[in-house]
Amino acid sequence: MPGRLRPRPRPRRCLVPLALVWVVLSCARGPDRGAEATAREEVARAMERYQVAARAVDPDAIAAFFAPTGVLFEPGIMPIQGRDSIRAFVASFPGVRVDIATATPDTIEVYGSTAFLWGSYFERLAFPGQPVSEQHGKFITQWVRHPGAEGTWLIQRFYRVPLPLPAPPAPTVR
Image (cartoon, rainbow, N blue to C red; front, side):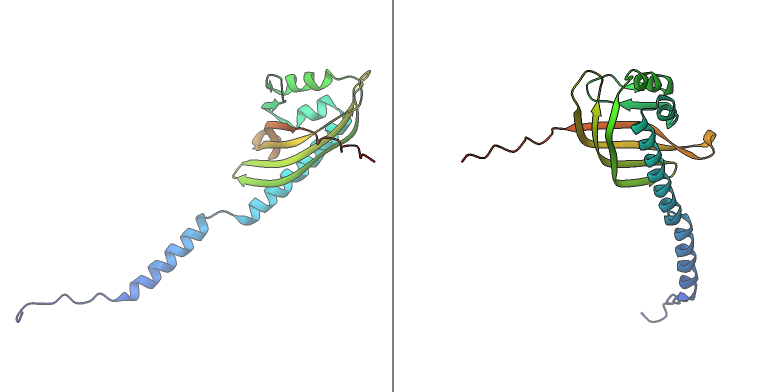
């Protein structure tokens, strides 16, 4: 229509700086991939040190890997909660011989001060007066960065899920 004023188009020059500010702020708030990688390495090393204590069946050393409120979930028994209870549980196996104990990490995910380590385990143990036993399965550990222990990663929850051993091969018929 004649005589009607048309709005002037706004300059798009201000959109580019605004978009740039948004990108910079988004990146600044995003996860720090370097810190996550470092945390994954720290948790993997902590798990390796835990395995050394487990192979030695050292109740004090094993309990020290757990947070004060840590919980050990072993199949077939009630959860074992707290360092003192975990220490007592491990100490209840005097004379056990550990031939093999491995824990192989599959995945480690880090969420701030919490990490989850999924993996597989295998153990060959000999209890006094009993035949050698083998167990294998999956495990998951929830680790927390404990501020009171100089940022040390400690186990908050440790779940073991045993899997049945494969059946021995059938004898060959001749």
